[in-house]
Amino acid sequence: MFVDARLLPVDQVIETEVCIVGAGPAGITLAREFIGQKTKVCVVESGGEEVDPQTQALSEGLTVGDPFLTVADTRCRRFGGNSNIWAVKIGNGQIGVRYAPLDEIDFEHRDWIPHSGWPFGRSHLDPFYERAQSVCQAGPFAYEADTWEEEQIQRLPLNEEQVVTKMFQFGARDVFSHKYREELRAADNISVYLNANVINIESNDSVNRVTRLQVATLRDNKFYVAAKVFILATGGLENARILLMSNTQQTAGLGNGHDVVGRYFIDHPIADGGVFVPSDRQLFNTTALYDLRLVRNTNILGHLVPSKAVMEREQLANICAVFFPRPSRRQWKAVESFKAIAESIASKKFPENFWPGLLNTISGIDYVTLATYLAITKRQSLLHAFGRGGWSDIPNNDRRFQSYQIVHLLEQLPQPANRVVLSKERDALGCQKLELQWRWDPENGRSIGRAQEVFARELARAGLGEFQLDRKDGLPRLSIPSGAAHHMGTTRIHVDPKQGVVDENCRVHGVSNLFIAGSSVFPTGGYANPTLTIVALSLRLAEQIKKELATQNYLAPAL
Image: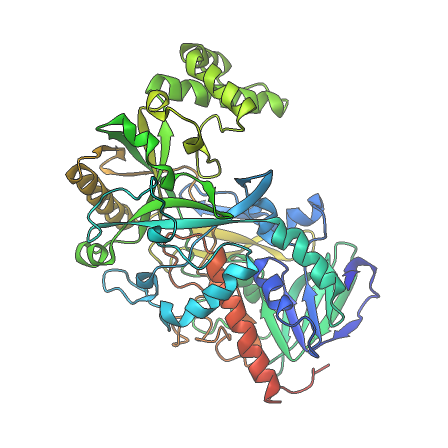
C-alpha cells in the first residue's frame, strides 16, 4: 500500500513493527525481505513517485573545502532514491549502474591506511553478495576475468603477480525505481508513506531505545511512527544529518556520544591518469574485454587493478584503471568541443567559448563527421566514457583510434576531518541543512601516483605500449569538482563506539532498536561502486532483524 503522507491527519500515530526510513536501494531491499510475512512494515520516504522540485530542495546543503560535487544534485528524493539518477547506457535503451563487490583487502586492517578495517572479512559477506546479484538482476557472482573471456577475447597478457584484470557488471535502474515499487505496492503487510520527512528521532528517558519518529510534510502536517525496530536508510549524508538533528535529548545528536557521527566521509574521486599509446594499434581490435558490452545476457567491463601483494608491498590505496579508446589529440578535442556546443544548444543555452569551440570542431571535422555517423547509425557514443560502451563492435578500430585514455576510480583515505555537520541555514521544514566539509589528502594522491607507476611499468614490460602519466605538481590530476556521488562513511561500522557509530550488526551503539543501512556504515570504500555492497549489507541486516524479532526481545511500540 502506498500512502500520500500529505493527506494524513495532524499528529496521527502510525503503529508498526519495523519502520524503514528511505526508499532507495537499501530501504527497498530491506522492505522486500519482509514481503509475505507476518511482520508489519512501514517505509517512510521523503519523495514521491515523481520528481518534485520543492521536495528535492530539501537536499540542498553547503560544501566547504576542496571543489566537490553539489550535494543537492547527488541526492535524489524520490521513490527509488539515487537509482533514479543512475546514468550508464547499458543497451536496448536501458539505463543502469556499475556493480562490483569490495575486494578482500578492502575489509582488512591496513597499517598504512589509518582507520581502516571492517569487523568482518569479505568471505563473511560473500553469501549476501551472491544474493545481491539476484536482487540487482545482474549476472552471476563472477568478477574475475576468466569467467568472461572467449577464444578471441582475452585479458591483457600482464604479470598477475603485479596487475590483475577484474570485471564490472551492470544492471538496470528500473529494477529499483519501478519494478520493486510495484512489488511493495501489492504487499499486504507493507505500507509506504510518500512525501514524508523524518525531522526527529524520539527516545526513552535513558536514550537507549527509540520510541517513535516525528515526521513532517511540506503541507505543514506532522505525524508520528511508533515501532519495535527502526532502520535509517537515507544515504551516506542524510543518515548522519538525521542523527545530528535528533538532539533534543542528546545535544550532540543521537548516537553521537563520542563525536563520530558525520565524520570519516569518503567518496570515489576520479582521476585522469593520462594516455596509453599501444606499441601495435592492432590492440584496439583485441581488447573487447575492456569495453562495456553484453556477454551472455550480462553487461560487463574489464579494468586493471594492482594485485593484493603489490598493494601490501607498495602500501597503496585501492584503485582501478579503465580504458577508453581515443582518436588523435586533434580529433579528440574536436569531438569534445562539438559535444559541448551540441549539449548547450539542446538545453537552449548559448555555448560558453562558442567561437574557440567551433574552431576546434572544424579542425577535427573529419572525425566529428565519422563519430556523428556512427552515433546515428550504430548508436555509438561520440566519445566513449564510463557510461558509454560498444566501441569494440565496430571493425577496423586500429584505423579509428590512436590511444586509450586511462581513467581511475580511487579509494579515498578515511579522515575524521572530512565530515557532515549541521549548518546555520534551515530548509522549508525548519530543519538545519547539512554542511559537507571535504578535502583531498595529498598522501592519498601520492599513493595513487605509486599505483599508476605500477600500471605503467607492467604495460611496458609486457611490450604493450607506453602509459604517459598526466600529473599536476607531481600528483595525479583529479576531476574537478571531485566525487562520484558515492557518499560513504559518516556512520561507520566499528565494534568500538569511540571509533564507529554502529556495531558489527549495524545497530547504533547504545540504542538497542535503531539500525543503519547503506554506505554510510562503510569504514573504507575501495574503488568499487557501493551499490552491490549496500544491497548485500541490507540483506544481512534483514536476516539479523528477523532473528531478533523472532526471539520476542522487542517490547511493543511505546506511544
